[in-house]
Amino acid sequence: MSLWLAIPLGTGPCLLWLWMIHRHDDHEREPWWCIALAVLLGALSVLGVLVTRPWLESWFGVVTPVVDAFFVTALNEEMWKLAAFMPLLCMAELDEPLDGAVYGGACGLGFAGVENVIYSQYGCDVAALIQRGFTATLLHAACTGSLGFFCAMVKLHRVSRLTALWVLLGLPLAVLIHGLYDLFLDGDRVRAQVSLILVLPTALYLLVLKLRWARSRSPHYHPPS
Image (cartoon, rainbow, N blue to C red; front, side, top):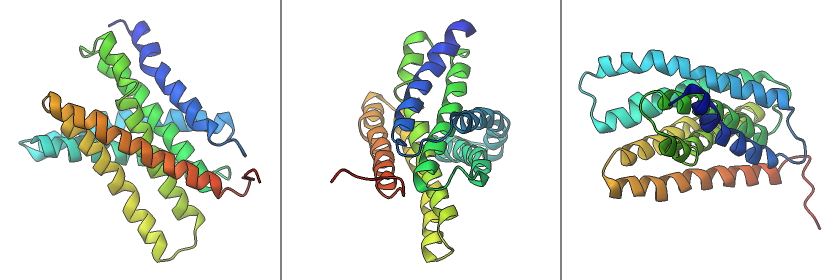
């Protein structure tokens, strides 16, 4: 596939989902330059995956479907996206849990856009690339958006037993959902349907719950009486 065709097809859906996530932050919108920075950091994190994935495959030796889904792919990618997100925690603009979900989702979409373009250069046709815009792209946004939410909760709350809970929930939950998605998707048609009909909607539902919860508790949120 031509690179000039792959870039708009691979990144276009990312911009659509980014706009939809950003809409939830309608009481104190984050500056677009901060969102753009999050997208850029997420896109750059793909370089880390390209380096560590061959090393992990070599280290594991025989890569079973479970190992590939949960460790070589899910844990590897979520760790790099988490590393891309961490500098954003230092920004003064990230001052409520909702911001963590927004910036995390932006990181995930930056990663997904570059990943889509790379896939297009390895035999992914136009139909498959468009399909990824509504499947794998959304998965990255959901997983990293949730991870960003948990990171923001850690930043904004005083150290306590609840802080440890946020840490323990964030990364394992993202890896579990991501791993299940990849594990089922690489199976037969029935297992692929489980991935697309059950795992992906669950990931999106959890992200929406976090967005709504965080939005309702924003100091700038004034629900109608």
